[in-house]
Image (cartoon, rainbow, N blue to C red; front, side, top):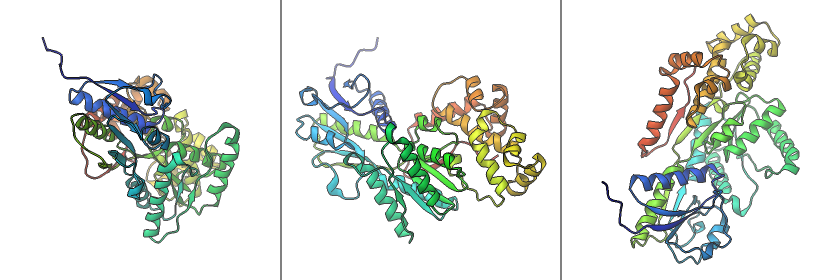
Length: 414
């Protein structure tokens, strides 16, 4: 019988707000490090996975890993006597990092640079940034603004930044109206980088409200690769993938070394993004014919509701044969192929989130049956839905250590 480890079990506090996708990914990385190295920590987290600082000074343990993007966390732990590892966004000015604390950062400049290059490679020459109001708790968003401004000025372009309002129920209508006004005032076509997926989702909703075609007129890309935000958008949303799990693993490794006596004051580790999940919202392909642009805008919003070619033609206001002719001439494929492409994107996005019934995936994505969805996967991706999902799991489990980011796409063009 295998004997249980006899080494000391350390009591570690993880101070994160797991309502945020970044914090959840960091926590997953901590868990991965512990299980992969057979390390046993007695973990303290709030029962509902929220971050609460009240009484933290009375907690008795051996170490802490905490999200320092909130300045209140740094202040609460300033006089902490146990080893602390900070996690958060990177800073352009080294003096902005908390002194005397090892810090593992997501590289804000590289996050924005990857989104910027993706939009430029899509043929867009006008770019804008949708940020957050300036506030101490939004310092990471302001760092992304600095990165955006630096990139555009480096290419001799004038930065266009819109911060909008915070999300609150009483001011929601006014916030949307301001977003619509800003979008209408932008030169078209334009690519917009949102500092989070939540902001990207809001912007896509404003585009739908204003009748602005995504991505023909406004191409949108967020940051976080948040499955929840993606599920709440009509058009599959592109996003930069933060390497949150690698950040969590690095933070746990630093704390392990500190628990064994290592002095790591002011150690800083900068973790680059893992890549881009490139979906429909940023696939800017300039449409020469307005009927094609209008049809694709409709398809992106309603493909998963089971629409057919005739309904698309009716929405555009021309005959089915004329619309098919325009699609063949401009895109080289049929209207039906375009509908399948969006459904396939939606299906792969759901499969990425975890275990799910194929019949439910088919229904949510507008396929007539799971058997038909299986046929489309085999034809377009060369594998079944379950095999596709298994390959995703193998890639995630391999824990690739990438020196350079890469771009992923849920499916190739049909």
